[in-house]
Image (cartoon, rainbow, N blue to C red):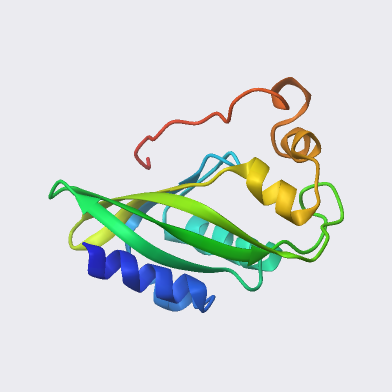
Length: 157
């Protein structure tokens, strides 16, 4: 399991979407609660990765540890990325952010079937020179700007 997760980390750090997709199950569910997003299936995951790498063209992640119960894998490490553009409702400062990440993976048919990518949005905003409140408003709307991220794991349908 860790070999697959590490392979995905390497592919994403190179922004190599075809290599990343080869490691994913057709029913792959990618969730990022900080952004309030979920992508189900390979087509949606490809689009999500393209969008993510447009916003963070120098994204890289290093996995520093992991634990497994034989069915799921949890990894932790450091993501480094520079926010570009105005996707999040402001002009970032151009500084490269460095933040802890926690990633829970599920597996099916010897491929990655789910990834729950967790990081603290306020840390990214602070290092990128953006207001967390403004970014949350852009991502979640008026009613959810100060509420916790929504979303729960659910299988692809």
